[in-house]
Image (cartoon, rainbow, N blue to C red; front, side, top):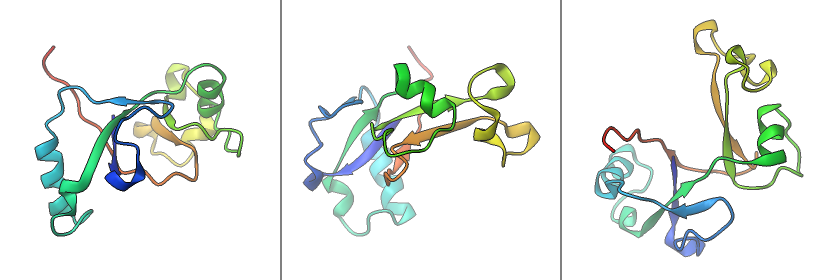
Length: 123
């Protein structure tokens, strides 16, 4: 999972907590998707950078999976919840269809991320 950040955010080094440089993601295709979807009109898609967003750990992970939303959980990251298999609190999927009771929660709750999830199909 990675986030798209404007260059002027000063985060392109991906050295902020819970970020790291992305690996072998085809950023040209992602830039095209951003342009086609209207996320960044004109040529501004050339001025974005990409950082991998890491899963939370320790107490932050436990709080995220428990559904806690408060100002203390202000670390960037994500957690996966799927209570039906014992991962996370049922309240985190209470509005989900019975066949879709899993979720990826992003923190902090006030963050406005553009997140792209890409599955690696080759080692």
